[in-house]
Image 1 (tube, rainbow, N blue to C red):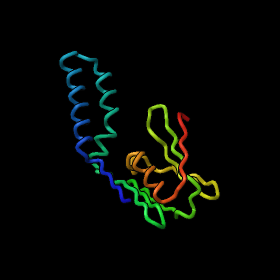
Image 2: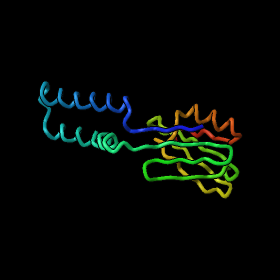
Image 3: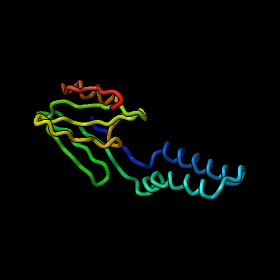
Length: 137
């Protein structure tokens, strides 16, 4: 499996345009206070910077190893060194994915580098890697 992701996606542009149109609507049609507008702009700045930098991320699973990257962060682990993979569902319905090594060392995978969770679980199953689901921790 070879999965790659880019911050400059159609979905990101649409989200940014909708968010800024909401801010403009609040400012000029509803006359929202300037502090509210500044707060809403500060919330969306990380997305705008990610689109501007075009941060790349991805994961590759081969017969020997798993390699991943997210911006300047890179990692690699051999399949023989993996004990299991933990999927922790969080209260915001996102997942935290950790690789548990044979020596109980846990490595957190960056969320932006992973495909959809069900696709990732099926790929792990194909390679014979055990995974554990944990809910709301």
